[in-house]
Image 1 (cartoon, rainbow, N blue to C red):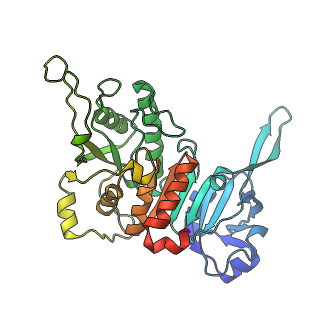
Image 2 (tube, one colour; image 1 turned 45 degrees about the horizontal axis):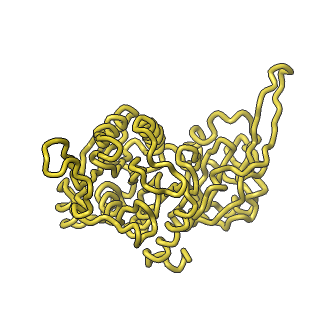
Image 3 (cartoon, rainbow, N blue to C red; image 1 turned 30 degrees about the vertical axis):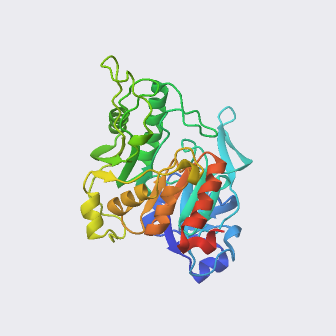
Length: 372
């Protein structure tokens, strides 16, 4: 991916000049000069210019654009978030029996556009299965903040939250591996999960998931204890007033802090917006604040905006890109807007995407006029 501003000549004639230093990564491995750009025919000349009729007078001179290499060609988006037409997939296959290539155009929409539910300024929501989503470029994310399904039979609309524990851990390994691919080398991960669970049998959830994360490549940094202060909601005691089989339940969750290759951040604006008081309080590894009301938010398992907001301000710079692969009700993106970060959320349930969009519109004064 590269970001650049279009010159007057580029905007008028319909091409994008790829700087020499970016060609190796962006143009590497192309089998021919013919390609696609946003679903339209395009070509690359020997001077590193990407030509397409689609580009003629499409953008004004000076427009800042993002160019991304996709499996299906190239995707060009203006930084201001305006939508572009869906892609058409170009599939090339070699007919070995005849010793020649056949090129077939498949008239299907590329997922990168088809599943883009919401895109305003630096906030994007994809209505998609995170494991199948191909819209987020590798090595592009600064920080992931998420709370995945806990597998405690929460009644989501289209996700089964009571699979076997072995299945749950296999699912966890898949999405943890995908997250690892998407973050930069100094990227970080704040993973909100249970310490353990009793429902369906005692399981050491935090220990097991942390072990899996390390197995797929993540490096461990710290664990933050989140005291939700909800001990009054406890109903399971095991053997009441008896040593026979009592349950021991800690009324806390954890935020496991991981990183990809190096802990020290060198990318980004290097501008921090955390106050002295916040830094002193939040670097204490026990956080005390209440959880979120499912009835108030309208989601079966929401987390409060305070959680991603703390993670974002403590572990990222202003302007960094934050990802939540299990967006749910949108708390992470609200925190992104409030802290001046770019935010990407992926959510499989369309109704929850609608809920996140609504919360962004009503909870974020900065964007209120643009999100309605």
